[in-house]
Length: 231
Image (cartoon, rainbow, N blue to C red; front, side, top):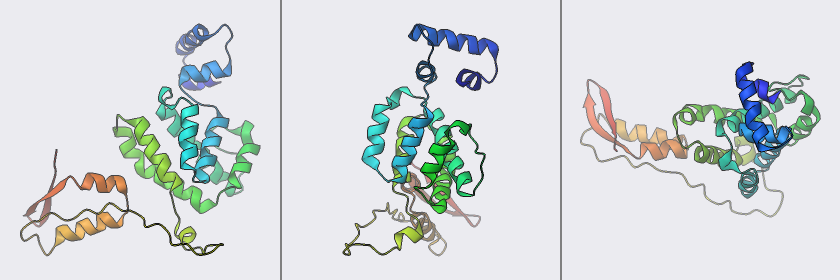
C-alpha cells in the first residue's frame, strides 16, 4: 500500500521502488519501505503530535533525532502532520470516518484527540497553512520544519493565556517580540511607514518581522509607499 501510494499507481515506478527496497535487506518489510521512501510510520507521527500538544520542545527535538530527521523527506513529514491534525479535528466534530488513510489507527487518534481542544487543533492547522507559501519556496525545509514545530509548541490561544494559575501566581516570562523600528525617512505621508511597521509588529510573527527588518522605505510616489528589501 505504501509503494502504491508513493508511486500513484505507476507499475514501473512501483517495481523500481521494490528493487531499491530489496537491496536494503533480504526481506521486504514495512520498516524497509518507510526507510526507502524517507517516511515515518503513523505511530511515529502520532508521537510527534502528542509532544506538540504537550508543548514539549526538548521532547520534539529528541524525537526528531531518534527518527534520523535529516534522512527523512520533510515534505512527507509536513503532509502527515497536516493530515494527522486534520483527522483529530474530524474526531472532535464527532465524525467516525477520518481523512488521511488512518482508518486502522482510529483508537490511537481518538486517544490523541482527548489530549487537546478543538480551538487549539484549528489554530495549529491555521499556523501550518499560514506558513505553506514560504515552505514551498525555501530550500532549507528541514530547518524550516523545525521552526514551525517550535511555533506549534509555543502556540497560545487567547483563552488559554487568560486562564488563572492553579498554583501560587508567578510572573510570566515576557514574550520577546521582534520589533521593527521604522527607518528614518523624510516626510513619508503622515507617518504611513511608521504605521505600517506597527501593524507588522502587531502580527507577532517572528519570521515576517525578520524579513521586514531588511526593508527600507524609498518614499511616496503616486500616493503609494515605495519599499525595497535590502540584500
